[in-house]
Figure 1 (cartoon, rainbow, N blue to C red):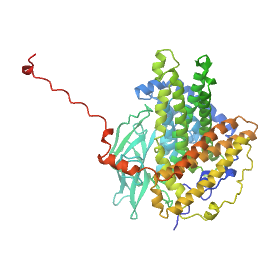
Figure 2: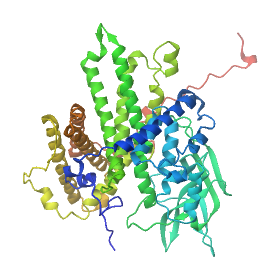
Figure 3: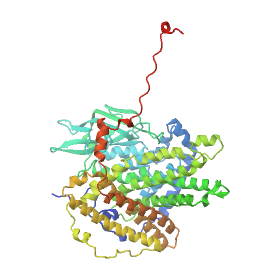
Figure 4: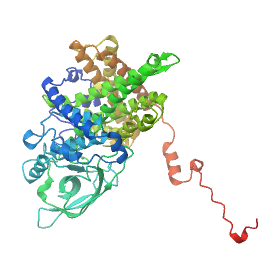
Length: 597
């Protein structure tokens, strides 16, 4: 029987704005009523954010955490006791019953103090025991997770393996023990958040069922015989975040602790439930700290530009500085906007499928925030390319930009390195709408001059032009994908052109960002607040340049022979002059009897 949807992310009962973009259809009607957080829900979040911020200001010295590479003693226990590892769980379980967006706000608030602390909150609430409670049915497994949540315990999710997280198959195996319902688990996992401190861990493993391999999720107590927790991974940033590797050698796991899910009809790298949690979880793990750093950076840029005078002229009056500030503010607005779109609707009617957007915003948020941090580094370098400690020693404002930049770089890698995320989106999502060819293929290729329906747009002339551009590029995107598919009848041949897929995903991501920023600006203006119009204009102007550049590269004629250059280097037969020079051999030391001087 054919799968009911084109891919594992689609939902036949709920539309997605980005899914429509992938098919060349611009659905302004899906985003024009941009969501706003319920005021009472916002007040609930404000109260808890105030409590969390006060706790972290009192208990956490982020520079000391970075230098010691450890969180303060007892902090994780205290976070657990306060229910911060179960923010969305019911109060009866010791949680706070928070909305998706308030959970995001809590992680962002923690990240403005310490990224490692924020990641601890995020890993528990996104992929920990409390997160899986939403998908696990009644039974022994739910009882196990409920006990962990109620006690404020710690958990982890183990998926990545030494062979590489990008592999479709999991080398970790679970083998049914004859005559029982139990399994023997064998394998190794790496980059496991909270592995060194967790008492229960979910483990993805390959199971042989009915003659086919399937990925299942098993829940294992870390004190079980055969479980080994290795040393902490020491990252370039996020110092102090408990992260390590786990090894499983003939670990006996009761069959009742396996999460059994319905086959979705599509090949997925993890289980369907885990894929859904990971999609939304990236909002907490990636987008929340990205937004926190972006907000800090634009504040530091303002403070620096306000106190700096060059040749008798305030720094903020120089044209290029103004552009750098405006771009950074607009990008911060865009990251916040995309986070709101990806989470607020699920706190309301839940009639939209946001999984496509959540997958794309992982890259959008981390890349935009990286650009903001890079501009901040360039601007503040006028006061010294230094650590906060170095600046403090000489009396300069000790802005911790260096620490946050190291932390931020991790976000482009965590959850899938940025270019590979785009590659997967292109391969698994975008191409699925063109194989087989869509029913509206001929209409997609036609140039009928039909104007897009932009009803309800409350935008100034420049932003209305940006909206028309986004609509036109969406239709052009669909035509391009269809033409590519027709010129590559074999889907696998086009799927192997990874750079093409990455460029397509990049164009769609920019269209998404423009559309959401314009939708939010329009909604704000409709309520009498015009303040977002200039931010939307700045963001969309830059996004159009990025789209034009991506489009030029996509339409360019065949380029250099990258494969030959790579093969020559890999074989060790070419470009030897680029090798680092070998260290000079030391002069032989003369033996005493040979020294006649």
